[in-house]
Image (cartoon, rainbow, N blue to C red; front, side):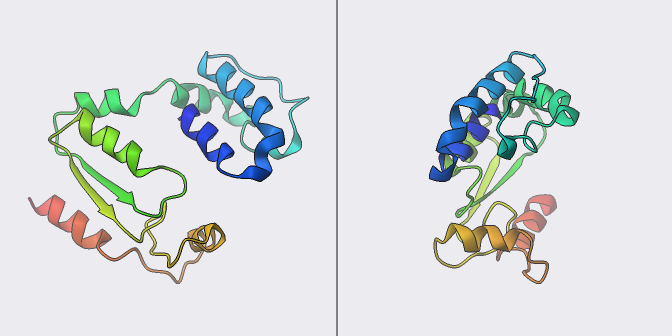
Amino acid sequence: MGEIIKTQLRANPANAPLIAAADQVIDLLTSGQRVDVSNLPQPLLPLFHPAIQDFLISAFALDPSKIVAQIQLPILIVQGGKDLQVSSFDAELLKAANPKATLKVLPDANHVLKDVEGDSPAENLAAYGAPDLPLARGTISTISYFIGN
């Protein structure tokens, strides 16, 4: 998860001045150390707030591919083709870790499984909080089919 957050931060050029500080915090949390945020740039405070550092330490210690490889139950991996936060490559890594898993890519779905048109990051992110948008086409049928089989 730490590496994914690093990738996400680097995806936005406006974050360039924050990268070094963010990397340092992520590396410390990954090593199991809590971080003093008193000198952290303001935009990073919500991401690394002391109240969530224990959660981040535990989450950064997990390797999803290793976990998925050990699971003996059926697994469904649903990936949005327009996901800005987690890449299709990450979904493929999970599938490779457990070849029995089912991977379904919904081509127009974003991270919260809502269809978005075009490639505008702003429109994609706006869909996150749009309660009037239904789940992406294929989400319900994919889950229903998986559960039924």
